Length: 94
Image (cartoon, rainbow, N blue to C red):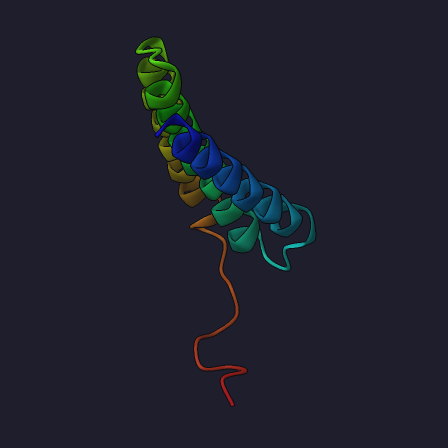
C-alpha cells in the first residue's frame, strides 16, 4: 500500500512540474497565479500522501500550513490584479 502512496506523490510532482511551465510561459497573470495555486495545492497533497506512506504525522501540520499559504497568495493576487481593468467583455469572442 505504501508503494501506491509513493506513486501518487510522484504523479502529483509531475503535475506540479507541468504547472511550472505555465508559470514561466503563461500569457496572462491569471494563468500564472493559477499555476502557482496548483503548486501550493499539489505540494500539500504530496505532503499528505507522504505522511500516510511514511507514518509521519508531523507532515499533516506542514501540509495544512502549505495549503493556507497557497490560499493567502491567491487572495493577495486578487487584491493586486483585481482592480486592474482588463479587455472589455465580448471582445475577441468571435
